[in-house]
Length: 269
Image (cartoon, rainbow, N blue to C red; front, side):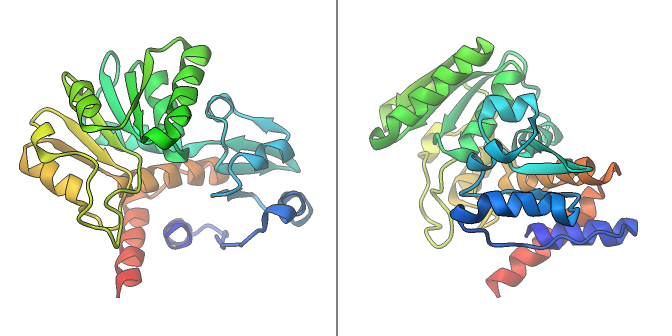
């Protein structure tokens, strides 16, 4: 959906830019990044599996991306390439629009992959205490992430195995629940990482899954009176931050969301 939403934004503001997708094999990553300089690209987004490997080809990495250990946006200033992680800022933007005030709050994060890394560091940097839960087979990922957060910022972060007992205990007194796993994603739309009985009014629930737009987790959270934050809003948020880094212009977020929604609906047709 990124080409659709960025090109809609360029058209809206009358900017002479175009956003195009390129498939880059792992072994050609260095050549592709060199091409940015040679061809004068203003910038790019980087997605899996290149978010970590691309860092070694850049001239500078901003502090947030350095802490997270991943880059998803690159800006080219006359041949000097700087890496950013706009996933973190996009997540906080979506959360703030929903009315969540992070300082001193407690968050429960499910999953310890790429999305969880950006979200965890964004929350920790905003004063939120974290409990990160991951399945037993990859519990070491959660432990490493929690340890890195403690080492780089001194924030409270714990790691636990994702099971019903630990989840129930972690959610007791929590202010925010984040699903950073793929549970509930199309076509497995009836899957959910959290039993409905653990959801309640006053809890903010964010689901990184946005296909379907209304996952089972979000449906059931809404039925219990929780405040919902959509993964689509994070996608738009990170896109608006990247747009502003490249262009120096205020992003037309509403146009970007409209275009992303249209592309998502078209993809289901």
